[in-house]
Image (cartoon, rainbow, N blue to C red; front, side):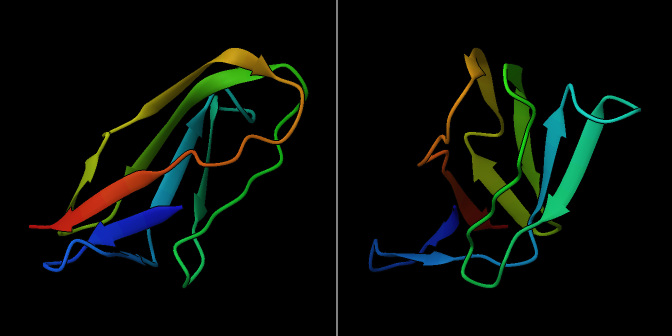
Length: 86
């Protein structure tokens, strides 16, 4: 889920964020664009490890990337990024 911290410290989803997954596909990366709610999902091969990197013009994300170093064998929830408009 990619969310934006508002002034009142609540979070709302940011749509249109490109999430790049490394160590996948023919060229080593796969990119997807998240849903309007800010959520995203991508099926990866069992045992996948890699990095997820969010990007959208006009935004800074924290963290700027998340490394998944433990091989994935089941669903991972709450791989979240917080975005702030520049």
